Image 1: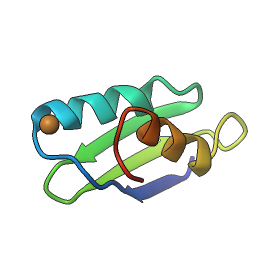
Image 2 (image 1 turned 45 degrees about the vertical axis):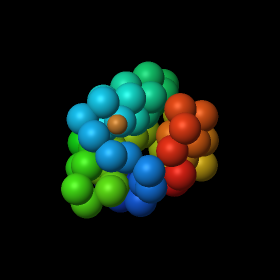
Image 3 (image 1 turned 30 degrees about the vertical axis):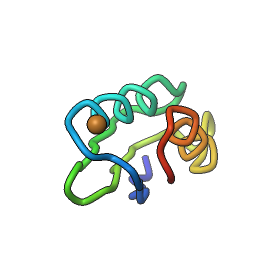
Image 4 (image 1 turned 180 degrees about the horizontal axis):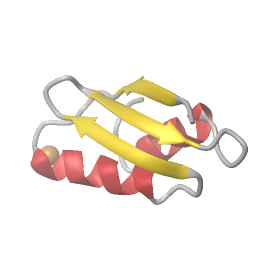
Length: 67
Ligand SMILES: [Cu+2]
């Protein structure tokens, strides 16, 4: 399963980190997500037959951050 790193802008605290983590893990096909607040990025493991990077970025944008 591929692991992708996605840059995320706009996270400033643990609440943001949780929001982004929840948004990404709610996507069907995502098996693992690790959001780094200080790094401003998310490491996402997903099934490419079920979802893709664009969908993951879309979920991040939808909750109010830049991906
Ligand atoms: Cu915050």
